[in-house]
Image 1: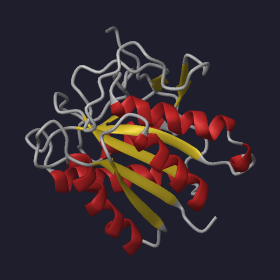
Image 2 (image 1 turned 90 degrees about the vertical axis):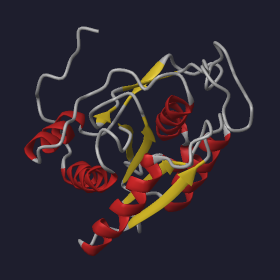
Image 3 (image 1 turned 60 degrees about the vertical axis):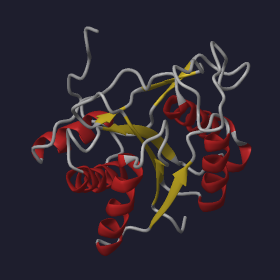
Length: 211
């Protein structure tokens, strides 16, 4: 592999002028490169299908050790690695191409869901050690973030061209800048990448939720 990690964020959507996920990725990548990590970045459109297609093309081309996709969760107050991607599209608002799928599968005939293959508990522990709010999230929603997360995990689980590559992938939601400033989020993402690269067996820590 010539790439250690592929980092992705999203372009602005729903009339916003910025998307903190892409801003954080853009800041995290140079910091990681300075430490010797081989990083590629990709800005994804907030469009059902197209975002997953672009990510799949990049993964097949780069064959990174780790894929960490990120997205904005404006209502959250912590950085939240996602545990589960579900095979469902149910849009509250149209995507940037005007599509509003309701109760549709991401991949027809695909499994109900996939778990992240990143060390989520170790990642959250690293956030806590750095004084950054973080938690394991049990839902990535049903919008384009989940769409990309599901497509990524489905690709890694089923694509014959990636068989034996050992690529691990997952998704992290970041809050809006009003909750955690982008430079803090960017530094935290760089730390999460490093944890993912060095941790093969996840920490055994409580990370469940009652609701």
